[in-house]
Image (tube, rainbow, N blue to C red; front, side):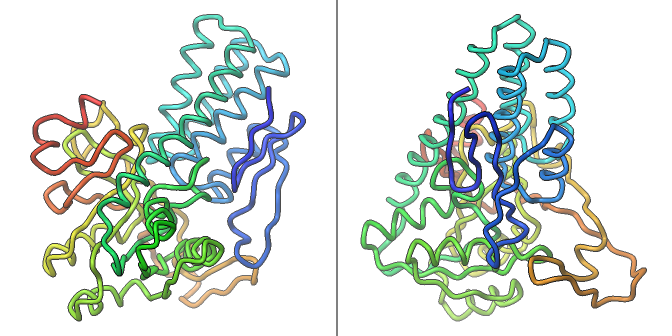
Length: 340
């Protein structure tokens, strides 16, 4: 299988190298994936994260297994294992299902490798398309608020919501960004701030609880977030805290956009209530861990509720920015997402 390179993944000389996002921004450590169980551990541990990138990493590994000569049963077992590694991000299922169809048809290793390369190139193109569409909505001097991490650490390309932001910045629109720290795992503080700094985009890091005050003061012109799964009625799951932002945006009349590739739309999911929300370890809320070490700030056995995502209903969304177009609620009600 040919070499593939992105910000957070490298497939080179038959080895999958993963940038361990748990160690950012303090350390840029590349982990060489040993086997499918190792990859599952990296996915579940959030060394690899971001809905598109999860699917791409899994697809690359299946292509690698095909290239080394795994048979149909072995490939199916690997796909099944990877498909179950995280339940909410639908890109993972979508890409693996594409490869499973090839495996079921008896496709040879070259055909599977070509499909993996196509998936990788497709994501780069999808990111570019949605970023251009989204940047067209950004006005000169806008202050944009974003949540979690949606850049090149989460995709093969330039990202979703952060792709829009960096594209608008390159267009000279003189924007600035409010970066939610994104509790409990601090993807905004650790990853988005790191990416924006590298891109030269002006930003301020804020605690998640500060966004309401900023909106009330008129300091937020629009909100851009990503998505892990979009139902055909426009409801979508994203990093926990997104729903609260949407409610605040509605109250303060701030435009609220979700930016995602078509591969994040689940055509089998009718509404947000049908989205499986992942529950994660209590230790993620009881304290914090990273390249800096670890700290527990709650009672050791404090009961914890820790959903990784929440669901934002369609009626709170100003627009869905996809690679195929920008859609409003009327478009979505008319079936625009289901038809793409």
